[in-house]
Image (cartoon, rainbow, N blue to C red; front, side, top):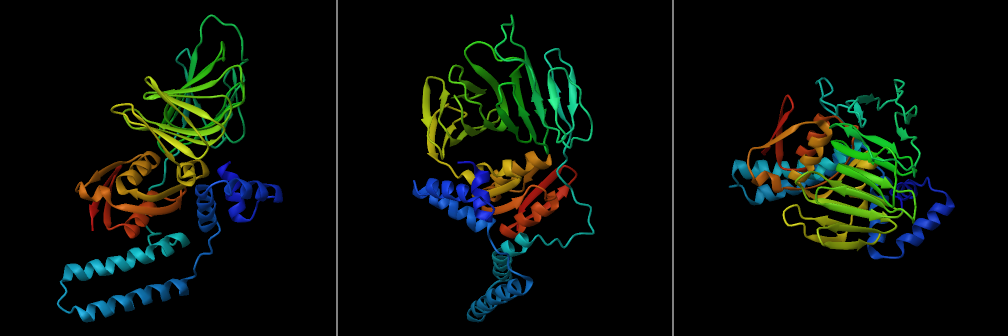
Length: 373
């Protein structure tokens, strides 16, 4: 089931056919019911107005005042902790509305640097992510949105397979349509190699980073995504692969069927499952996936559910092209539950983190220092 279709249902924008399809899909398992309910709760939420927020915050303060009266000997540090808990509890309402009390500051935004296409001869070509400039590259076509499409002929008997490479920097995204019709949406800080022509009995690409695949079905030639820890094999399906060098690799299946292999071990995934490959011992483990969180980047969002601060900051670092420094190891393990769109500035994102977690931050150029409050 495509996450975009679920989103349209949650927003009330789906056709009757889509609503029926999503309803039937959700009724097949409890996990799917939870996913649909979660999507409706997020996308279909009605945001509180300022008066509602003020009343909720005042109510929380009243509860805390009762506690303070009962414990007059409370230390200053403990009192600050209580005050912080009110801010954290109220924080979700503030950031949902998107208020920003620092409009006079110069804010750091994700830097959408130019994506590069490197041809087999080593020549590099810049690709506009905004479609502002015309790009003329033999064997490729770039549309008005900047999406590149390979126009080479598949199945041609050539003496040597040559590979092109797309390089997406931090803070960028890109979509590539291969000559067989397969669509790859590439996340920031990602490199993918693909042949100038698919020949022989398979279609193989090489990935370092994160990409969402919509594979064109071809039963005679399976599609393979190879990365440092393993390989994913499919015939035609939708799935997400996150595989960065020397990090655990994750393959999440949205629809269809895929086989994930590492060394001599392999597993077959069902829709809604993900496989994790341990970077140290290459062991495979399969679990139910949170599709909304996994595919959030593809939909222009960040979704973190009970995620560690370190995990959240790693994702933000790849998007905002920054280095993260922690004042202590302890702060890395704080758990956060955050929804926000990727158009926010770094300053806004860190403000949300500060409200939802017991942390403070300091920006020094491209370095962000995180401390416990």
